[in-house]
Length: 404
Ligand SMILES: Cc1ncc(COP(=O)(O)O)c(C=O)c1O
Image (tube, rainbow, N blue to C red; front, side, top):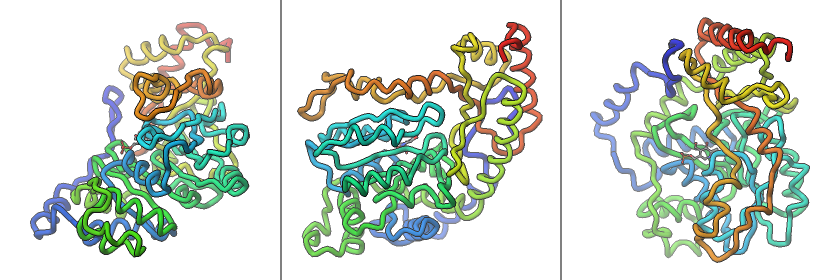
């Protein structure tokens, strides 16, 4: 259990994980897998089956899962992609390597997810894809996005890296898009240290994704389309395989721990939220009625209208840190603000970036309102109680009670 003075650590220690990895090695299992067999097959099959999807492909990272997805749907220079404006940068950075225009869409001010009401005005004859994230585990409006995709014949790419097994009206995220991607990096609910996976029902997307980053026997086994057969040995030349030991770790977590973690994180964070909302100036994270599970609930980010309350957010964080409480300003930012997206100096393809085109005021307002608390998962109620007491001390010390 984390004490108040310790940083929140994820993934949690699993006593037998060392033995699981050792067993895999000692049994002489391969440390390089050139096809779709062994632990790759087991994990891809289980993850696809849990989501009811036809094809699964493990890769080296979530970033590369997204890159493979964009290659899978055959994005070409000149295409336009409408992308949520608030996420980890890697939701969108792989797009820069395709020469497409990224069109950032503003988000809902209370969830940080793409605002479907603002998508249609951004569609042009060049738009090919809508790209969403399920911010901190809260599914975005899947039906809303799908309706627009259907109306304009667009592909839907889901970045589910924050939201393993989160549910939209009882259906897992990652079951809505033409292709869905997850990170399996160290901080994620399922973690191989590094890794990623994509799921799709489209044979074409799958085969192109396989060919992009997998060579030798994998394309021979996975690629059926005659047109692609000549690429069997070489693929398209990149190598994006996950390390087999990372896959072993993820498989073990998925089989033994993942759903228990989801359940205990839910109970623990709901307790934290309730106390914050009832006793301090923080509001719970918004949950739309279609959210039937927050799943991985990747980040715990309560909101407060600091400006209206006249509370200096930075001062609050520093004060909490001075008392050894693990809170911080959110590191995720508004995507259009990053130099990589707005500065022509860093251009990879020949189109002009225009920083003033997509101001995304709600993304900025969302960002200003949230604070990062530890994503407590294992019923750390005593520690949570001490966080609440500390916040109340702060309010008392700085006379904020009358603002509540
Ligand atoms: C929303 C989102 N997308 C993509 C990624 C990239 O995943 P990876 O670090 O495995 O490349 C992350 C990683 O934090 C993420 O949070």
